Length: 600
Image (tube, helix red, strand yellow):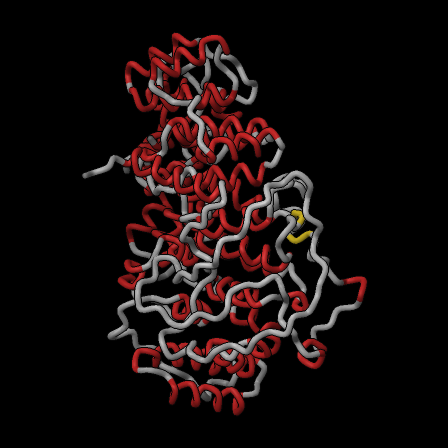
């Protein structure tokens, strides 16, 4: 029996509902050993429990029992599973004073685990972004989320919430909670944010889970130096060979080539046949710190899969990864690659387009990357031509700008590349004068501007676009003034395109911009079940009423676990928009609603 995308999404929402009521669900707990079989087969020593205070349990939160941890491989990386290291407990590993002495902080510089995050990076999220939600419940939701999700703007909002300096909820250890947030960020492709989050925890407060996720974050950003402060305490609680190789790299980078070489030689002798490249990649970094005395040549022949270790070590040494290996990994790895400055702009361009469509790369950053193509000697002629055309789109006369913009917009807007091109050209589109002569391009111009959140420039076209057009529909939901929309106009729009009509109705109803006495009738007319209830709708609605913007975005992501907007039910959009508005996050609500119309 075949299922439609909408049916599959409803099944996904039902799965999220099971999590909401406390039924254990298979999900992604923490990553497996980072190396192929044979690199993580040594059991880790059992940690000695050390009491440590955690944040008090907030009153009023649900008291769900935590599900058993499920260990999953790196997202999108196929291959046999190796023995994982023990997953989290709420107990930090016992680390000797000698291991920590070189990193010991004075009392005034110590950071509490009762509140963890990156101050100033949360997009106005307060410490109560996740409110009184139960800690184990939040962790289960994060762990089971199949990232990335359909919406660029949900991804952006969720990233801001995850990195915010938020209070540690009740029932979980602060460092473990930071690890869960960072692991979700890694799976979303937000590697720099994940690294910053794990580094916001003092090393003396690290737990086994946070050590494991910290290595993931450093590999995803190609930052072996970030592992060096962690190596000694990590090796005190884990005998995994990945940490031993990291130790060799750090010794090499500090000029201790002989000690580093001994570790590398031991690892090479112990490595299984397929692990030679993993040792060679580490040795290449060791050679960087030993004046080239241990230079290694990387041969990718015979390598059929890209692991997190291989990507991270290659990125750290700016070693090009064969393009074919990216075909066997999830989109997250492409997003890591897109944001890796050690690789040339031309090498990263295709992945940066995909990352921009997902919200990992901003409009400004994508424009900057295209601009760098002009000085990239290895850029192709097609890439340099694109950079030249983009310059014209930004600096030419309106007629020339529009000509260039139309060329950039040739890929269908429902595809990742097509949407990325709208993100790329958003500010160029905002420079086009809103006059009747350009009305034929108005829908595309508005879609481009709203893809980057430029709602005020887009609203200049309000008097140009006719009622019932796509441009009119996008502006109806993006309008920050909250103007009401006539029910008849929505019905007429739905008559042209039933799917977009459902989404427009769901968005306007969620934003409170339709006559309240007509909403139920329109829901029946357009077949949008906004009144249907299940645990997911109850949870997201409750989070909105309680003002928990972070919880709303996390639940919104669980309702959009599909790579294509066409698989998101209109009722999921309604509850997402309504809950965000109730939580005081109307800006995200409006942009998500506009995105739904643009990409469906």
